[in-house]
Length: 451
Image 1: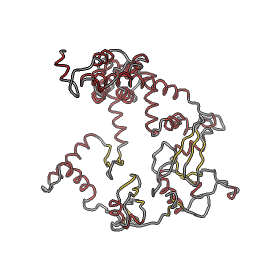
Image 2: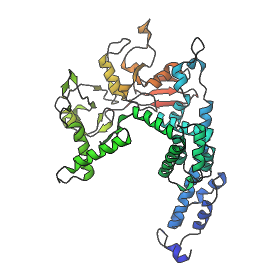
Image 3: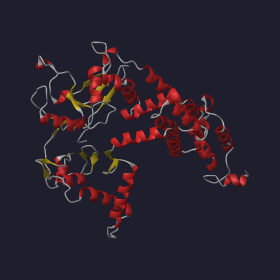
Image 4: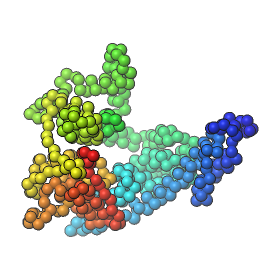
């Protein structure tokens, strides 16, 4: 390339720096500890646009190299996690089905140590185990920086459902192509090869997924949320046609097509004849329950600030008022401590909490009290932080809000049955401190309603 051609790539004018040539050569070398030590020499301000792209690729190659190292460590963590015999063996020497089927002590520690959700930690461990056990070719490509971690993860995920022979056959067919494929292309190619190598298994797995169809709902930013369903692709195609037809029937009123499509879906679900509105009563109980926690002055409009929508998170004051003043809304009072903003409540003690105490604890904590878990509190068990003393309740472990916490079934079992995990709760700050079998500690802080 001539000097004139090089200068045309320069981001701020002027000729390309000699570092362009250096980083281009570095791009051709396999990532290693030696090449990683040279990365500090990358100075994008001195490079042409061409050189910056080369630098970007070099950094990506080294990220893949590091992630291959992390895969090795994660696979070792998963392989050598010790499960105490008391957890999985009953008095007769038989395996406890609950723990032998699903227990994995590595998940919680990795989730806490890396500040990940449990599901993400489990995914990383599963991916690492799979890559280490039966995808050596893919792991080698990752270590050489020729594919990304996302591609390696897709290989592990897609081939998890097939046996070793089919997995090896599919990987062998694609290993030479993956360095030139994007992540989405890799996924599509894997699916095609799996269908080609195991058509009967593909049909059987589809039938299993059909039985797992479900509605899904998750928070989005700025007071929005995603609502949809996981269902057979052909049904989704028909639903999309119905939404489009409804949207095309709306008048020209300034809405975009995408806005009309979203409104059409809402109309088809909620505004059909016979659909229940918020507050309507059917069969003697409310057909729709939406829980919002909001300070009283914000509710009345004398102040502005966020409210908390159960299962979603923070919403605007206007959204909270719209829900609160909808026909049929029911208000319940919850008290907060002025100094900390935490919910406070005093209730009679007994082993089973009263309905009012339960509502208080669920509203106070909102999610499972394990640091890495986001299971909504209303789907959790109420656990005594200090175990309840059935013979002498007055000696401690009382059923008071300060000694109660929501724990999902998995983490409730972890606390109760795993001798290596312990938890304490500070009644003043509400912080739950968990100690792992390795001795590391992890804190979980409940939400503050007024800051």
